[in-house]
Length: 203
Image 1 (spheres, rainbow, N blue to C red):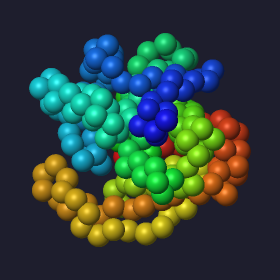
Image 2: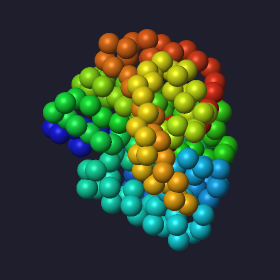
Image 3: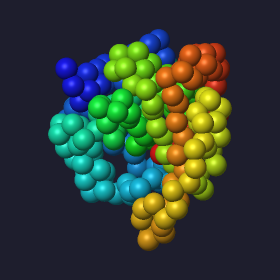
């Protein structure tokens, strides 16, 4: 079975529930997505209802086409939607994929939701899919996300200069991080043992 199929599983623990994205999730994510702080370092912005419609439509189309595996995150403390996170750039032959396209609503930041979602996705990547390498990238200016990735034990690899356009026309320098299979046991211990999430999700 291909990664596109196997990766799109329901992932859960006592803290969070990650469900593959469906049309039924559109309403629950809508309200929290209109917080402008979410999109400071994102490659797109959601400022209006129309922006959200296009953003969700793109995520759902990518998910259905296998370009990304998009997850809806539920915070089990509250029973409410918390945000979204994805597997993408899945190179199954090379046993390599990326975790990203991550965003959380204001009420979920700093609560451990990001940490728990990353724990479930990394565990699924290494222990079910058999990945050898999991990548993350973020804006070089996003110090909060960079600290969070460092805190879980992801290794900073370098900066790809002038990587892509950002809303407003700025050219983003993207910084890459990774976790390798041999590093996963230590990263898992960090994620499972840390009591609070130091930062919002890397984007």
